Length: 181
Image 1 (tube, rainbow, N blue to C red):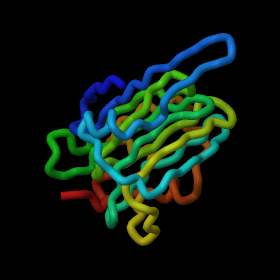
Image 2: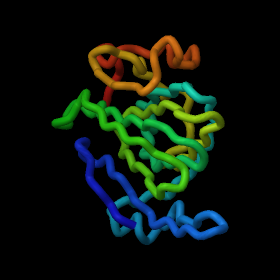
Image 3: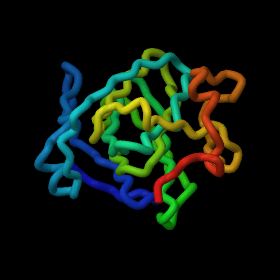
Image 4: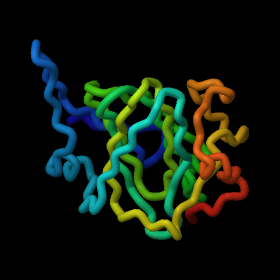
């Protein structure tokens, strides 16, 4: 596994080897010893899977209470994945990092606590898998408005074509959000 730093401190690109032949491909999706070597040490008490139609945008989600580190990857389809730094003490507070993740490319993204997360599905039936360091805690859930103009996130979907949940439409702009110290 190769580890690459991003423009956001603590957000890491993990590149797992992919072995292809006439049958398809094989890839390790999680390997504890390699993650420990990269400084990622969590028990991962919960795994989540979401399946999204083309043009779905989910996010930007985080938990202010019982915050979650996340390890995310795509099992089918493709997404543009967005990590937004909401740690007030961070030199990159309010900045985001985006990356395209696709099934079978061996790429995963690690986000520490204090990062709001979202993604845009680029293909029908995109299947997104993620490990979280804390179990879901509904009382701590928060949502930053996915299309907050101050964030300047360049979603690959026209706003009129975006399929967004009511919860995500009610997200708050970053300047009004409860953030991490």
